[in-house]
Image (cartoon, rainbow, N blue to C red; front, top):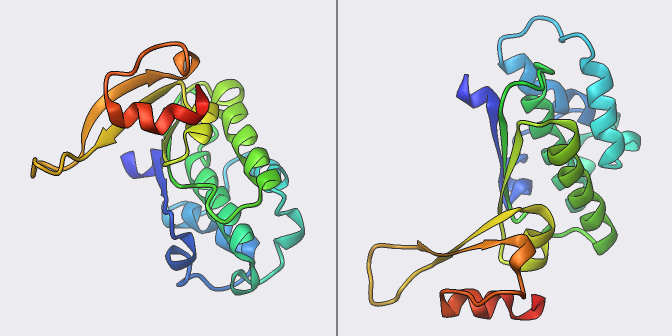
Length: 190
């Protein structure tokens, strides 16, 4: 059940989608089939159409996945993850989308449209929809996240990355950060 409520969008989605074949429309629905469903839930087609339109993929549904550009493939991968999360259409069930550098390879206009869609979806449409964004870009994090955890690896410590700071997005530029690494990451936002 957890698998159906959690989706991970890899940074290198081209490689993650390399094994997919067929038309984009079929590939988007594939996760629902793997959930053991024999029929689509009520309203599912409308939900897919909404996601596809928001991500500007509506003209690509009959295209073979192998012929998508890198940006189209990234948006298709995100759309497929959202379709898998929202197959049940239950707004009372928690859903988590993990995005690893979700805007890599997208032009600025497409980045903004994607981030605006995700923010609106998590804030207005689905009250229990959470996004975990992994990024080195503090602009994206400030736009998409309410709470930012900064990880850092100390060269003298072999523990690995640890949380060195927690930043509330509204406080960026208005408060002193606890760690030098955070100060360096947030300098352009102050």
